[in-house]
Length: 104
Image 1 (tube, rainbow, N blue to C red):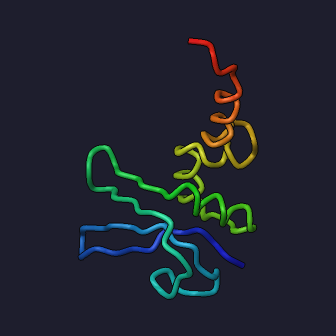
Image 2: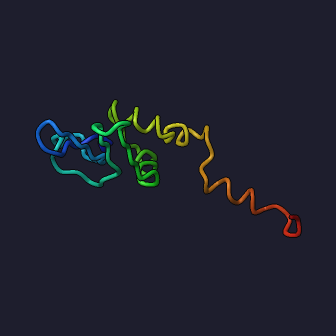
Image 3: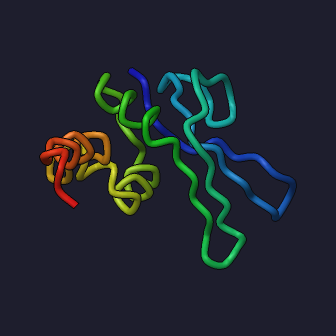
């Protein structure tokens, strides 16, 4: 099973995490399939950068997020988008371009 989880990097007492898609049997900092983003808890406010397209692709394929990654994805609004509660920007643009071409 593929899991979306954090991979710890950085030096001692200075953690930095990468969000990765990895096989659930591999160790925390072991082999991974793809990097999805990163999380830096030391800056104020903590910095989270997620490639939404990659994350949604893995979630649609059935990847299970860890508890922490699930909370980060929820804060980013990706869980709601996956469940269809929120339309993606790509879906909103065709509706706007459907207006008649002579109106100003």
